[in-house]
Image 1 (spheres, rainbow, N blue to C red):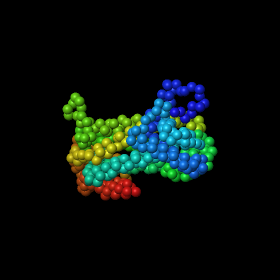
Image 2: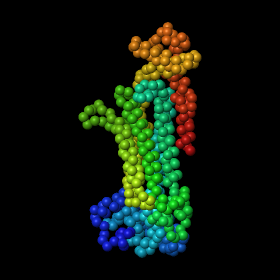
Image 3: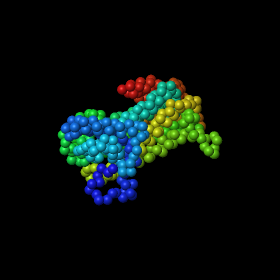
Image 4: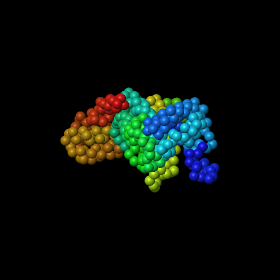
Length: 456
């Protein structure tokens, strides 16, 4: 069945059909397409465009089509070029010519825009739920490691000691920003195009505000020409997914580094590790490598779709068919990755002994400068003095704490016997107690605030 063949004397060539048809992927919108059609049938009846009896017949037929999809009994026909064609063809088979009245005043342009927005709103909610599971896992592991000291890095060089909890919670807040982006994207996509027609609006007195409300949208679209071609919501969601994947890729990279035996800070559960077909000793963090690798693909989906949009003239253009495969792929990829990443984090084994053995007193150089500041030395001078002391210890092959007080005072007279108290990693963490810091008290406050955030 074709929805548009009357103008043409010949049917489409097979190779054009292969290029043009979208049924292979847009059948994922079957529930949204039927839901939108049921609401539209009611709107037509309320506007006295069709009778209530005709509306009930159409709605009953659509419900039967949905049952066929639910039970996998629906059979696609050769002429079904997209999900809209397939549903209308089957509806007409079930209820006769009255099925042809459903499309009165409606175009596939406003129909697909509505279907895809509905699908995207639900996908955003689903993704938010999956992220919430990962955030919960991060909190759960962090709670037990507020006092576990980890070497912190900048430029991948040893920098300052932090707690394992502080490290894990840094990813919680990245994901919380992703949650904000998803909520914001969903709010913008909650605008209903149905009733816009092909581009010029609907000639029948349908109530677009009621249609929007019935479908769970916040409002109808303001301009029918814009409504049928607006795919900002796809770009919004692709961006939110891409940046979320970037955050997850960073987490994956940390786990890959810290689980390397050269570090040995963490161990992945056997269920989320793989081995080598040749080397019996290998323990590979493949889920993390896949997270890192698939992030490139998700970024590519965003970049490709933006390139598709950039040169389009007003109104609907067939180029917009490219929106679905990009977004379907990105969301399906995330839904595949996130349960594995969440389970991997939940089952992480934290090797506190290896972390402790990796702590070097160089990590306390900033604490040593802070000690001098508290004695009254300006920070820039303190920084210079401690740099000289670090260099001196390196030349001697000794730890900072091995330098005697006379040597330290030879660099700065502000040093006193109480300097020995600086060389305590737990003390270093405890001092970072300002809001957002790595002290146990500050991290516990982070965790409480994070729990409250999830509860909201």
